Length: 90
Figure (cartoon, one colour):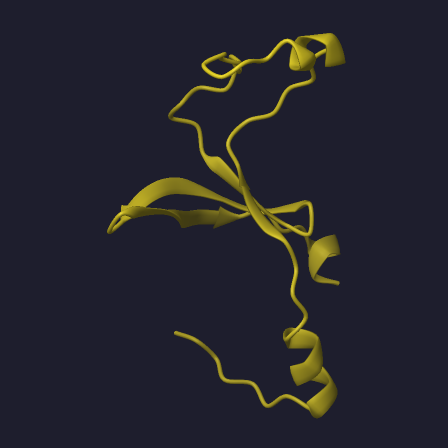
């Protein structure tokens, strides 16, 4: 159940700030020479299992994990858990 909280004008303005949101499938470091050799149809293999949770990043920082879902003809992310620490909330 959502809690409704009264907000001040400043708080409302802060809540309107836009931040980049991304879903991270996998990552790895490769030599630049390998990147320059990529052509259409080339494949990059990752060590992450395809059933592993996806990571939701906000402003470049991991926030939650979830799974890919299909919504009509688009993809979405179903959040399964938030990865916040007490320090993040302070």
